[in-house]
Length: 431
Image 1 (spheres, rainbow, N blue to C red):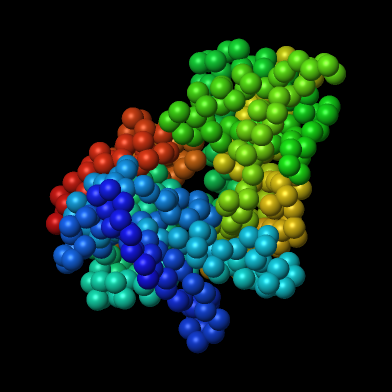
Image 2: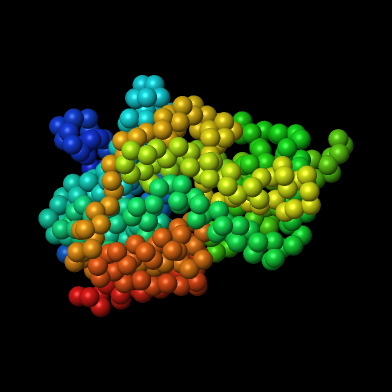
């Protein structure tokens, strides 16, 4: 355990030992990392704890510099634990380099089956008494972290003083097919809004797609494809995403002695945006977070996309239609084009075909909930369906919602202290 200071904050790095399989507490153990944050001058005080669960799946907790964003507001009254969920960040990371230690694809898939929200919550419940002395704590869940928070309410509400959720109310019973069937129309609306803002991007996107289809270039081992280009639409889910996408497209081409080519600037930006090297669990576990029961997720995003032929780039190029970007969806081709995922292709297929996912949410327990809960629901959220979120909000007793179109999915990052203030005010109306 080591401590160090940033302006206004004292950070302490902590490691915890937890079972890989919580049904076998004496079996294999893994490490989970958390970074404690407390305001300078308050490090010796008794403060209530707030644990932050990052979005994803597959992302470690944000690395803050001092009191930036919402953390500065939180440490005014909390001691904060920024948790790297199992498999992410410094918590026994799972990636193409480490997973072969488990064995082959079958062993890797069985190992990763322990990396969903149910076991993240079990980790929290082992960690909590070590920090709080047994007292309940407040959970702040962003995006997938909110999915984990709803699981927490289902499985261990006695550990919770309050729950704050931003852009992360999951459907309690939707199959992955239902999630993507709702997602593609939302993404199409985001693309239409982008093209209305930047009409010049319609032709530029067609030119880029045609070039990629013909030449199939590589950048640092990453194959650049029309499908990969379309997936840059994931940017459209952030507050500044449309502008960022436009600026990326405007640098696409340069004149060379061999003619017009895709610029190194564009190729590197596309490779970076498409790479899962820093968060491979996002690709491996993205559909698994929706798995409940015996029905496999079965590459849901890929299958459901066939129901929306307007997203087919080749068809768009044959006519005069716009090439539609896609968004937060994972496909088999991701494991062919990305060198960080290529060795895990068979493992991903085994996870997609898995038929023994345990249920994640207890609807009866949620209906009888007594924990104060507040959720920010972003009206135009591209990543989490607003309809699904509001139905879940109605299913959790006492949950208070703040429905807003002031922010996109990244409201906690963009709105920072104000978003946290609003959620804290809502849960305290119940106290």
